[in-house]
Length: 217
Ligand code: AP5
Ligand code: ZN
Image: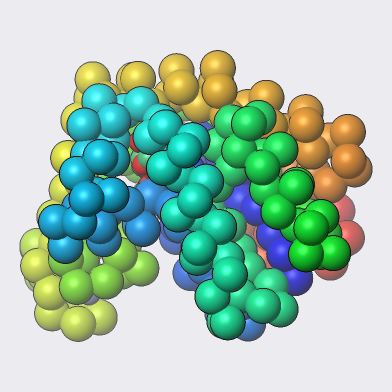
């Protein structure tokens, strides 16, 4: 399956993607994680992306589209993928349409995670991520690690993202409304959008998402 996950910052895209990708046996491709990996490795691409990310703005399309395309062309993505954080504006959505069309492929669904703004702010404020693996995501109250600051899965150090400060989160939400939300209409016109509430426990949201992808809601 080829799926795009969309939703505001902190909606739980990364959290759900980890489970959904496992259930669907497709790779989880997160442009945010790819940028963060480049930043921690000190690559040229990471250097280009960092200032935009720290300010809560989108990294320019010229950088992002090429990076996403390279990742989608890896052998493990040949039979499907779960895109998280890409596309993020209409230009990127059109670039993805063209990429898929030229490979004679189609998206199966665009899963839209709906969460009220006050909840995403709480989720982001309490988020802690493992330095060893960005799929190990915790929350100081909603899914607290057994030992403060230590990853339950691998013992790695937990940290707070640089762009999770209150001011940057406000910019990210604004960018989501003005630049990313329009892609929902773009895909609605293609009959691909399924919207679910992302409120409730993580496993309840996963169940809801799987049911929606099976066409059951
Ligand atoms: P990116 O990394 O994509 O960030 P984002 O879209 O802002 O989303 P987040 O990672 O903040 O949230 P999430 O929805 O994954 O939530 P999570 O599962 O962690 O992008 C970062 C930056 O990179 C952008 O600002 C931009 O600069 C750049 N970028 C990336 N892609 C780009 C692109 N295509 N073009 C241009 N620039 C790009 O959950 C959040 C917290 O809530 C966690 O603590 C989690 O434990 C908790 N939680 C999750 N689910 C639940 C639940 N059901 N109940 C309670 N708590 C929950
Ligand atoms: Zn870990």
